Image (cartoon, rainbow, N blue to C red):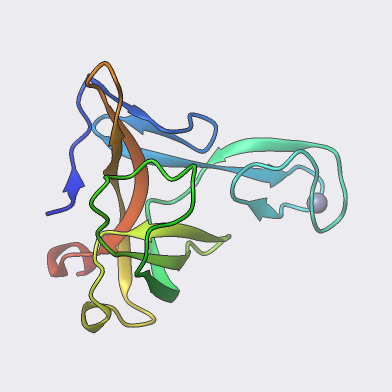
Length: 148
Ligand SMILES: [Zn+2]
């Protein structure tokens, strides 16, 4: 399995985008206080009404697969993944209030279908020089137990 439980020695690759909470990840979005538009990640002003007041909100940790692709070659620098590149899935997940782009825990298109139920998890992006795991967020297909 690619997904991993966060430990005390692991940390978020970007604390402004998601935080580690109780071994899981919580995506941080922004909500416009004027019109209620939700963005991910948080933006300084609302893309819909140009309002200047956005507040940080926790986003749902599950959604449905809206679109996906498989990254089959190593991205350009500053990509920090393993030297030995393994293709990974990238998808858009519809969380209801907003659609977010995220890595996927599976890279086999046969295991993915638009409309699938997806659950938020974390994957190791890279290991820091001090040995701590730097995690990024990812979505994986929900298990059948979770979707019932
Ligand atoms: Zn707005």
